[in-house]
Length: 480
Image (tube, rainbow, N blue to C red; front, side, top):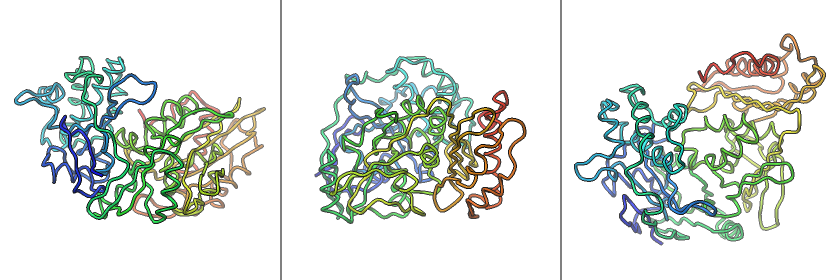
């Protein structure tokens, strides 16, 4: 029942450390690999970034697939069956790895605290670019890869210049097919008074859910991982959904994109972007690549946060959620699934299986805009999502949903009724604020005030009007 993984090329069997210990604490405390730093302990700063490699899936070339991850939010049990590389695993004796050399020579490091995390993000970027044959990379790709790493000393110019040089040369590491294979994962981990279970299929997951009704369900743990990271409390009993094959599927059925509940944002990005470009653009602003490689669609829906980034888009698309339990399967509209502040219609013996996102019909458009203090790596103040169709100069249909405006993400039903059927060309429609005040009573908190939220939501509706009537206007100023 030990957690087994490769750590900088060495096989580790860890049978004595509690499985909900954060990887950051384990690396720094147990392994004394202190190059991995703690900056925020909540997945924001990237100082704890490590590289995690897992065997390729079906249909992929053999070898390991590497991703950057925040060690502060990962649990030790999540490393089982993986290969892990920290900054200490890059250099050979007195020889720097090319990533380290490029940053040092290009003055990309000063105090050095954030540097190990930046090194690891660039290490994964270089490896993946070489494996995919996509080098050299556009600057947008480099900036996105670095968006999860905060540097307070240098500014990013020398770091980006180092990245440009790196992706133009082959990595100094062995190709994926020549790397040592990590050990086979174990279905259960028990240590320190904790038990973490890893079912392989849906039937086993439901059986464990029934046998252990008090267990915490874990997917990517990018939200629940804050409990051990910040509150220093573990999960005595947990069931992971990460290895359930039925929850890993991405496909198209009956004019809808279907995403398994355990599909990560990173895995689904290509399919979502192809079907819904606005949704894809929004996904690129959900945390960083470190977060998107672990966070799941089912987890974001299940936690039911009022500022969960995917939820307004699911509502605007009239998405459905498929649930499974001992009594069988059922489908609910996401609007019916969300019942209140972090509460849902999920029964205690049920699990989320998949999300069904209806494809746009001819003439429909989807827009989504997120208002936050920072463009990257920040929680929404207000997020608006809109699906609409225009006909004969009028707004024929509208589905409008907002996050950050109520105790949960909600449709703006009064606004929809007020605007549908009205002329859409010319000046922006009147009565937006009055309709939104009927739909929502936003709160003031440490992130924003109620008045600002009201104004921002109304202005997003006006932005929708401009986006559909004046496509020549540069509306994405925050991305410039």
